[in-house]
Length: 287
Image (cartoon, rainbow, N blue to C red; front, side, top):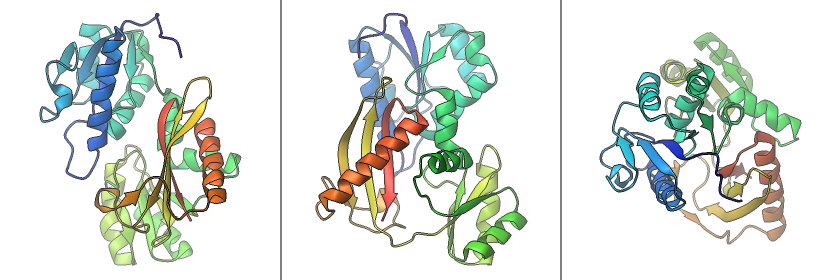
């Protein structure tokens, strides 16, 4: 794709403080983005409240703000720096949620800041559990049975229907925050309130559990013209249920038949097209 000449200054939102084994890839990708965009001649304004990452080293961006990652803080920085564009998808859930909120509350329109890399409606289709489920249904991609809950009573009824164990997935959260696998009603009653509290929209998806299924992943990159490439085929050594930060995987896939790999790629391409992602996407499939 040709370099865009209509933008000069880009705001990048980082992921903030992270924990060991979770989300360090966002610091890495954000660091590479700062380098690449500056090499192209863009002025970079970085906001990331994590001084412990190389991403916030003085030489990485033209301006670096180690400020709270909140709507109020970001708006003040936008008002001062007046960036032309916002790159939201290199700071994980934190940056995506903030960018979506800034779009919805009119801040980006107020300062004439455009979102690049991923659009606001794409964030919703990818992060809202129900919107994602509806999108998958439209393109005939099967997903685990699930229903949304907004209260403990709703969750108990859904879990009873699906049968234990079930997975609790709070909407708009990262790395399993506030959710998990529950094996009985006592665990459900303990974990669900945390999930409702962690979700921006107080919604938790109660989903059938695929514990011990095989987990396969594809890293797909798509540009704004819809051109796609699979960067990596990943085969998890551990079954579903082992957190990514604790698991082992191999790339390329070693025991998965080529026919199945081709089918996984075709499904992954349908998914990124339907959601409308521009950039990199991790597509995880259970078999």
